[in-house]
Length: 123
Image 1 (tube, rainbow, N blue to C red):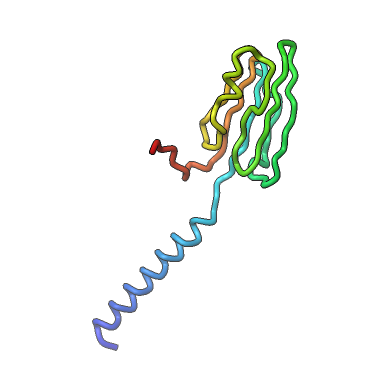
Image 2: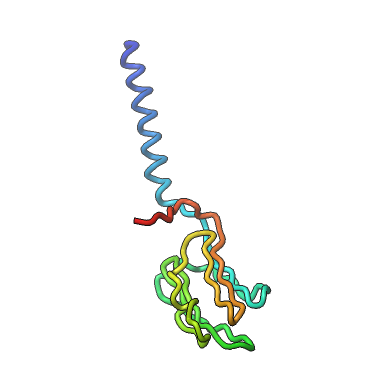
C-alpha cells in the first residue's frame, strides 16, 4: 500500500469518527427537572418535563394558589390568584438556571439539571 493511500485511509477514518460523534451527540440529552419551592422549602420536583401531553397541578399556600403546567420540556404558571399576575406573564422556562417567581405566594420554580447544550440568545 502506498504512503498516500495509508494517509488517505487514516484521514477518512478520522472524518468518519468525527461525523459519527457529531451525529449521535445530537440525540444525547442531559437531564432537566424543575424544583418547586414554597416559602423556601422544597415542595415538589417535576422529573418528566419532556412529556408531550400537558400536565398541571395546583400549589396552594396560605396566601393563595398557583396552577403550574408543563409539557415538551417547558414549565410555566398558567393561573394564579395573586394581584399582579407577574408569574403568569413570565415566559415558559426550559433552560437550566431559569426561574419563575410568584412573590405574593412565596413560590419559586427553578430549572435544574445537566442540559447545558441549549443556547438562550435573543434574535
